[in-house]
Image 1 (cartoon, helix red, strand yellow):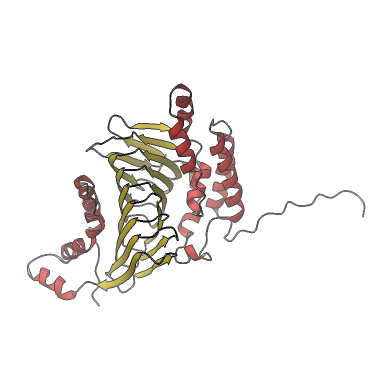
Image 2 (cartoon, rainbow, N blue to C red):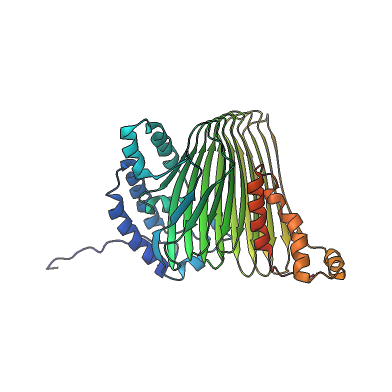
Length: 425
């Protein structure tokens, strides 16, 4: 055979089709690599390069994966949104540092901020198998940073509001929050509203003796997909309490991982998801007891109407070094239609005999007699459904000790319940 030939470059075999959105994401990944090269935090750039090289080969997750078996990403794939950084607006009390990661290196050269930089490095470089958390870390060149100094206390919350650059974009965002020793703060994090698609990764470190209340509100009304993760470490004698309220997006996926890494650390992890139409609301949580004498408690409530679908996968892991740990978990669901679907999987993984642990799940429907009673008092059916659903849903925010967070959570639940339909069996 004469002449020369060039061997074709072998393309990776993806588990999903090469969709318009996948092509746009790959193009954005190439642009991100160029943006990263100008950033001063070399370790962040190296991690981003490594993560990009992984997911650009493996592709986006599909329903063939166990952790995605009930959740399809068709709504994300079907149109080519512009891939951009999400914009974070922070309203914080005086004394709280709000910056970008690139700013901290310059600050460290002038003062003693090296400690926070090193702590953020450990937090941001945490190994993860949460697919979209890794995509966000690989696409955002300069993450946001919030540092709450030791001993700081404030009645006013720290307000975080994520928005996309445009309504036709897929926004990616990353924020790291350091709560110093013996702080006592409340955080309200809102996202999804006014966006087409959004992927977020939030990292929180709760230092010894600190107390953090964290209300997370996914209100992506009109959004195609909102995919968010939160990764939290709770130190010695510290407390982290959080409630998640989710409604609005056609597809929402929440991954929450809380690790209790200090003795006497405790966490309360609650949530409410409200579905209508053909929405999919997928919640995966992990509560990990790394050391002994730690405590976790979890209650997630789901309310599903029309043809919506809810997924709850809650994992509690108690390590062999975690003697004396105490953990409880419950997922309860209220079904308002014959066509809804709920897939619930509470899990216990215990490597120590000296612990207390319990978990469970329950599914029920509205009692028609209760609806009839309210209707007989002149209350419209839609309002009766809201009244009966409120009592069920409010438990998802009731354990927040901050009056303000409970109030904000209650308001969000009420907004999510408005106009729900009910189908009597």
